[in-house]
Amino acid sequence: MDYLQMSIHSIQQAQQDKRISAHELTEMYLQQIERHNCAGAGINAIRELNSHALEIARDLDEKRSKGT
Image (cartoon, rainbow, N blue to C red):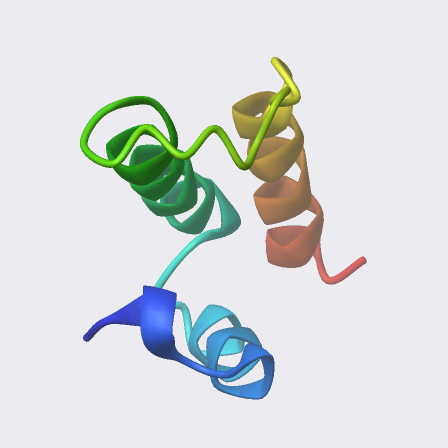
């Protein structure tokens, strides 16, 4: 499944169904940013990334697993 092309609603449903975690999704988006922003086209559309993004995603996954 190409989560990068899915609607927000579909991604939320996939997370609820445990088909993808916030951590996995964040990794995909960070890879996509690296591929297009820095390498390849070098468009530099994203000037700064949150260095804690994966940590935050893990925390969100933990909260989701606890139902909060």
